Length: 104
Image (cartoon, rainbow, N blue to C red; front, side, top):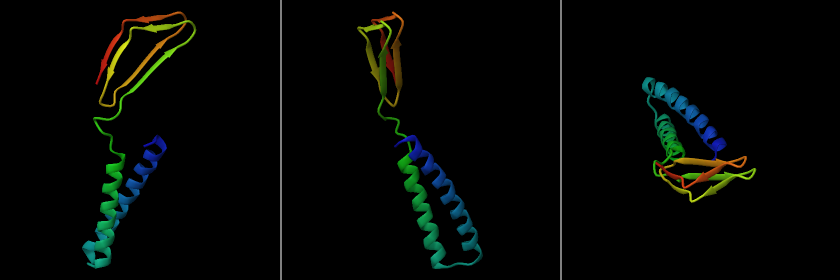
């Protein structure tokens, strides 16, 4: 899910939660099936948004290797998992040689 979509989902969750609170106040003062259904719908909507925006601990890892200005990366071993982000960069004639990275 993109960052923009996640932000909109977070904003929608706040609005849904506020609406659920308002309906909870109404339902405690006067009972009606319409309010009960509206409250159940809002709770299910909030649960769906939470499920869709929740990160997974076993998410995809991100590995980036960049070389510029006569830099070199050679014999690099990278193991990344559980959503780890690894960034390796060699610039201005720099050399990364025989680097072992284990990120979790």
